[in-house]
Image: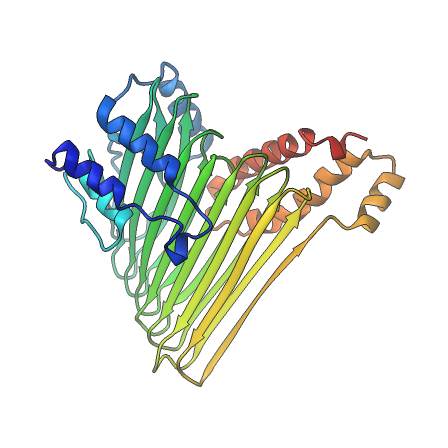
Length: 397
């Protein structure tokens, strides 16, 4: 952690985004600011007594070379052939308020450098669990050397009933001709807050495949910023968010096409039930001179409750002519004809709903680019959908 006075740290907390900022008008970080201010006064809390058990359960659920960041501190540095892993004493302050907060409060960061082809996924578990109010920061750099190949799994989790706020900054650099497969799983406790930003730079003729799964958390904000400055880059990223009563999940994505030809494709899907709110804002900017750009955006949402709210905003900014770009978003409810068909075959409404929602979400899971993570993601998704549906009286008949 940088040497700052409490007043200086409180001032940094005070510079966190507010709903007056255009990109944050739907997401209020007042609770995150309140938790941070109280934590600065109180200090670190007592680690959860079951933290080690949960770390073991998660790391044993997916076959990977695991690195663990627990309550903001590095627990272990796995030894992997072709991979260099180092601790960082500090993180760059960046150019936005949450990066400044991350740099000011960071305890330990991670730098991962990949050279060659790595067969086994690299797992990064970011987990928090204390008996008292807590704030944690995670800063992770991943760099793939030219013509290297690797898969990375980010797994975010938390424990306990105490107030928690986690803020994560990830930098991912994909070298020329390299292939990066990336999966992010967020399964935090339902009363916890998380903000996260991922900056991705894609090299010439490089491939980047990613999928993010938001299954937990009380208030979640994800920012993904992808910079395509090299011809031949091929980028594809998906997202799935499942939100139930009281949850707020906000996904903001931005892809900058600075040269062409290059490809970017994104598809996000959401299933919402109860009184909850989700946001998807996808922006693709095709800069002048980026001829040959192929950019596609899609966002589809399934609302199971008339109390659920989705704010979807696809954006394309195009400053050149020779491009192929498209975007679209849909918001709908379960198809009554399909429900009737399943119920006529003897299923009650709850089980029929589970089948249809599973089918809606399964396409994103099936495309998850890290095979080793699919079984755990499927298990978490099915359990979350079952809980979402069981807690709604609409599906009890």
